[in-house]
Length: 291
Image 1 (cartoon, one colour):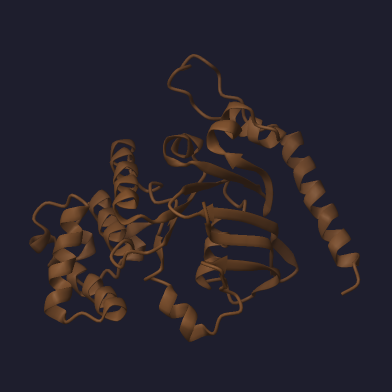
Image 2: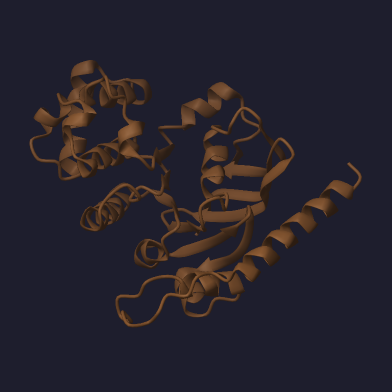
């Protein structure tokens, strides 16, 4: 398989704080790779770097992000914007804050289709109806004329999934798309994302803190902590025989439907302290190297 996305030794700092420390990963064409870690691990920062949406104080201090063989970080802004939304798409975490609350769904979907596919307004609306039907929304014509607050959380997320796949992207960044949903709707959304991936032939970088989600849909996975990659490999191998103590601790802290009587074991504080100490030691070594 050929890599659609390659991140090599990516370092990002915000002021004096390092938030990504030498992150490297590959997403093969057509695969789903999970990017896993606790809150603050740096997962969403990886996606923000790909999309050029880093905070104003953030600075990329080293590394390369390559999409289909082209370095995104070295690409002129206009050329990069042409890729984003069309060849690289995003399913954001919170559908309520990601959709414009004062614009109808039709206005937002039509704008995406007209911008990237150069369709007429009428043709774009017709395509929007097709996309909403594809994500199993009943009465798509009515939904198009709704405002976001008139839809349930699950329906809003389906709209965002439809928008993400609207231009047949090669890569979709799914940034914890099930976090704001209840368990039943989460399952439906995961099935929908997988169905859309197969239909459109896209690769997915699935950002999540939920190892259960990774086990269901991800072929491979990368485990982050403090902006560092601690483990990387095929999901089946990592979950059955994890090499790093942090990965083993995450697994022990995950509820298991097949072992409901087992007590959950929180990640040991001593392990977290040692991981942060190692991260700070690496920061000091990097700062001491001559530039």
